[in-house]
Amino acid sequence: MPRVAGPPEERIITLESRGPLTLWITGDQLSPANGALRDADPATTIVLLVESLGRGAERPYHKRRLVLIYAAMRGYAADLRARGFTVDYRAEADDDATGFAAHVRAHAPRGVRMMRQTTYGLDASLREIAASHGLPVEIVPHTNFLSTGEEFDALFARGQRRVTMETFYRKMRVKTGLLMEGREPAGGAWNFDHDNRKRVPKGTTFPPPYVPQPSAFVREAIALVERHFPHHPGRIGVWDLPVTRAEALAFADDFFAHRLDGFGPFEDAMLTGELRLNHSRLSAAINIGLLHPLELCERAELAYRSGTARLASVEGFIRQLIGWQEFIWQTYWRFMPEYRTRNTLGAHAPVPAHYLTGETDMFCQREALSHVLDYGWAHHIERLMILGNFGLLAGIEPQALTDWFWQMFVDGWDWVMVPNVIGMTLHADGGIVGTKPYAASANYIDSMSDYCSKCAYDPKKAVGEDACPYNALYWDFMARNERAFRANVRMAMPLRTWDAKPEEQRSAIRARAAHLRRALADGTRI
Ligand code: SF4
Image (cartoon, rainbow, N blue to C red; front, side):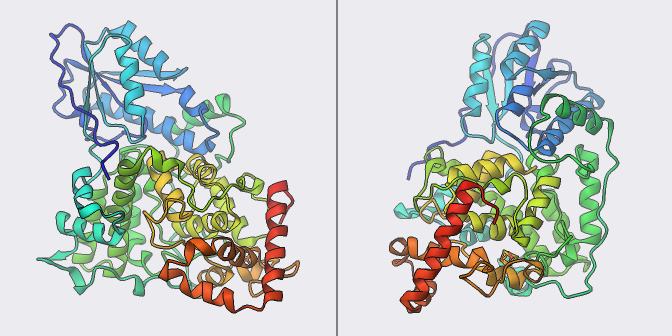
């Protein structure tokens, strides 16, 4: 398949200097090594940051997501000024176009340099704004990713439709040399998942959370968000995320010192009252550029080489960054914009009302949603196997659920959520990201958490008022999509189990599922 949207063309600005060269940096590009800054002379350039209220109002974003971005932009401007750059910070601009116009009036730049945007179509929009002022634009490659589109495309040899993450990940290990012993993987294996995926034993404790003191940037951004976006969902609560490079490094220090070694064993586990377990929660800082994936991987590897972290944990951490994250990034650019519209399983249900309130009798969802509403974050298994899995089983429309994830998570961006939700979570891409749907009944949730023992529903039952909703919806999902799954050998086992159920039981399960789907559609609490 031809690449539909690779790196935008590069155009070198050659106009004779009159005004400064504008280095236009957006809210997810707050890297000290942003490509637009490379070789920039502070004497002849000016950095532009537009704090666009219009962008914040485009969608009902979680308040914490907005606080994060606005605070981080303000912190970044201060960091650049300390490095000697002149920064034109357009605070509380109506939108990008208004902020840019005010910048042009004030500074009469001779041209614009920007780093490539991560959202499909945004390069063209910003280029158009600059062009409307007659200004040439140079777009330079993104500096926070390790793989290239060409490398990814080369894996799709001979018209191949899909490439597994595992194939891509191994290439990335070889390319970066991370956890390699010559040509072989450290420890003799590429993957140590069998050492991970453990349930948390009773009595296990986790290190206390590291909480940076909220800076003036955070306090200003909270006031701004409460002033302009009072009706947006989510709670700001106690601020506990890094918004500057220095804070992000301190946040990472805490992870490497106290959590990395124990990360692997419990990376898929869930425990009542535990937001974080040993997860790093660095994704929000990485996705806005405060931290570079490679510096984090190198630190993780150093921990393994120096004997302070076990290999299974280090490999699991590195896999998330140079495996999943890069794979998702490349999948987005290879298949957009058509990918965003995919709905292979024909799912059309709306996002349940309780995804915005947390008011449900399903204990697992109450826990996961309290994390989302209070922190704008939940770890990957709460996302995939509690909230995403429920969306898959209940037939929620892929585009609606993608938007919900994008809006409600502090690390949510289009390139992150489109392949993760449409592909991995909902299997709506026809099997590009995953070879089979991540569908699971209460069995999985019960095995990886302590939630079911506290729930009003019975995880062992599929029918009856007190039966766990996941169970009936799981079998109904198999039945509804039977034709699509028959050809997939990885779905043979659940389909055989469904086939073996007596007809009377199958009818009762489907009736219970229909009842649940109606309740979800009309907002009745379940
Ligand atoms: Fe979730 Fe079902 Fe377990 Fe309740 S019984 S916590 S709804 S999986």
